[in-house]
Amino acid sequence: LRISRRHHGNIKSSIITQDFVHGADYGALATAAETFRGLLGEGAKVMRGEGDKQKEEKVADFRVAMRWLISEAERTTSRQRYKGLGEMNPAQLWETTMDPNVRRLLRVQIDDAIEADRVFTMLMGDEVEPRRDFIETNALRAGNIDV
Image (cartoon, rainbow, N blue to C red; front, side):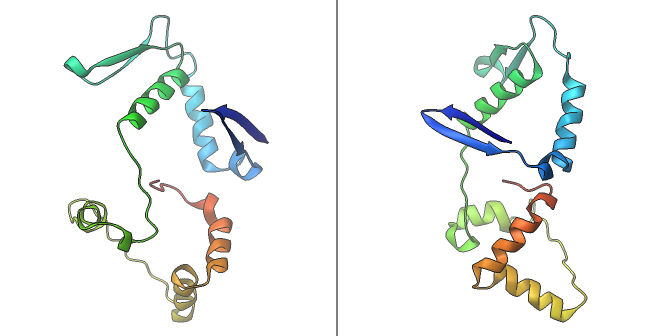
């Protein structure tokens, strides 16, 4: 299923695949939609901030509330993407990776040394095609990715 919409003069298209519909993310969204259906009554409003900085918006349903909250959050944040740690300045590297108060170190074990070498070469090596194939094959299995 392809869904297209015009946003700021540009056409944005999304494809919903069977893999997505049968995946865990869609299941969680469907469950949440059922939970929130009819939750908000007439005159409901959503609020953000406190004191002089408080903003509010009247909403008819949970979807409208979420869209407003997300647009408010996006207005005050920025996203940056890096191909690798070498592209970050020292402050960004500390904040995202090195600060022991926020980082998580996970032990990764692959018992077979040959398999470990193969996986490391595929993910970190110079050849793009095997890495791309791996990502395309396994992308829908990943969860909790911080984008």
